[in-house]
Length: 72
Image (cartoon, rainbow, N blue to C red; front, side, top):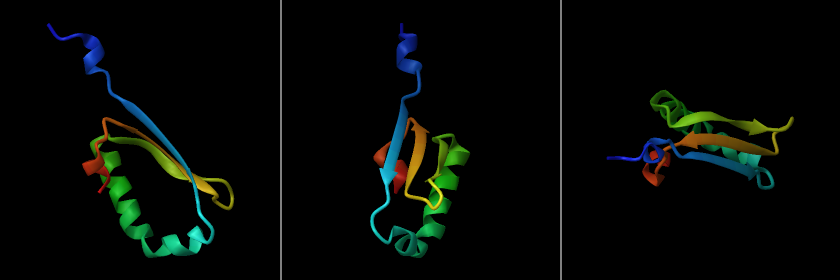
């Protein structure tokens, strides 16, 4: 018999700070970054993601059952 505890999703919270000039640097990768986030939201792997601050000084991502391959 499988324990119900093994069926619970693993929740991950990733909070990060932007480096100097990251708002300018991220423009080169923003389209691909948003496409990856959108793909993972549609699969249910990412629950919430977005920038923090105004202007943004970092970001937050809440995901579940993610593997390193999901983030490539």
